[in-house]
Image 1 (cartoon, rainbow, N blue to C red):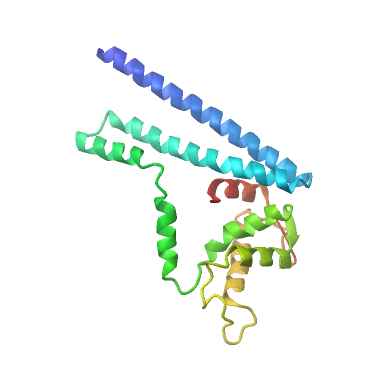
Image 2: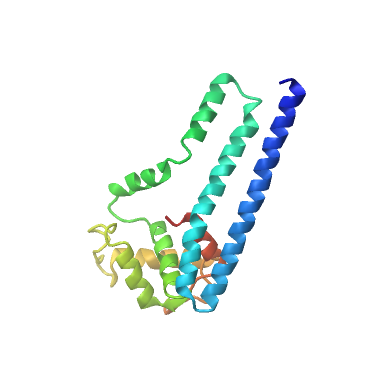
Length: 205
C-alpha cells in the first residue's frame, strides 16, 4: 500500500468516525426529546425506560470521542506514544472513574455535597418531573442509605437538621444556579429542568 492509499484509508476512517458520531448524537438527542415529552405527559415509566437506554449510548459516544482523538494523534507521535495510545483504547471499557470515586468516598467522614446531585435528579424523574420536598428527600435518603456515614446522620450543635440533609439542600441551590432544576424550585416543590435530564442521561450509573 503506497502513501496515497494510506492517506485515503485514513480519510475513510475519519469519515466513518464523523458519520458515526453524527448518527449516535442524533439518536441521543431524539431519545432525550422523547423522554422530556413522556415526562410532560405524565408517563414516568416510559421516561425512565428511555433514560436507561440513553445512558449506554452516551457512554459509547464518549468512548468514540476518546478513540477518535487517539487516532488523530497516531500519525504525529513516537512509537512509545503510540503504545500508550493503544493501551488507552484497549482499556476504554474499564470503570476506573467509578473506582476512584468510591475510593475517595470510602475514608471520608462526610459525604460530599455533589454526591446528592444524581439521586436528586433520579428522584424527580421517578416522581414525574416535579415533586414536594418531602418526597424527594425520602427518595434520596433511600437511594443513599448505604453511602451515608455516621457523621452524615448527626445533627450539629445549634442546628436542626442532619448533616446529609443540609448538604442536600446546599446541592439543590447549586443545581438551580446551574440550570439543572428550574428557577422556580423552592424548598417546598422541586422541578427538574431539561438541562437536568441531559445531565442525568450523561452521568447516571
